[in-house]
Image (cartoon, rainbow, N blue to C red):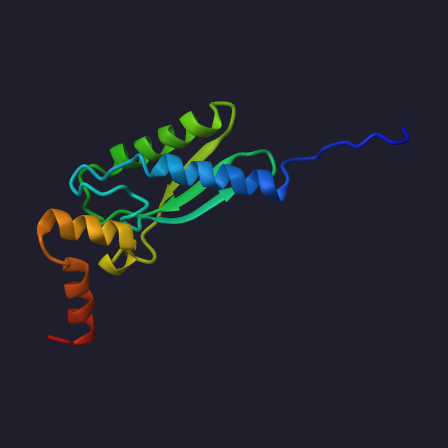
Length: 133
């Protein structure tokens, strides 16, 4: 068949668009114990979109003993599915390597935490790690 192009999966631009949609969706998910979304908390380590538009997310939590772990993972999965469509496979993997530390919080998240709690606990944590008083 001359002149016929068969599309075999998403283009790089389509994948990037879906990744941005996944990030936007994840920004609607909040850790119930900390009023900051999971993206700005630095809990999202990797988002990958395959050629068929299926999304895989590697994320962590602030603590391995998090009592709401399953709920946060389910909320993350549901938010992406709502954004990209139920016909896509969404996989959210909980990983612990590397462990979450406060320095993973985004600038926006850090500002929000400072606004809520009245001081820059992320900055204080970083100073403590460096041995600065």
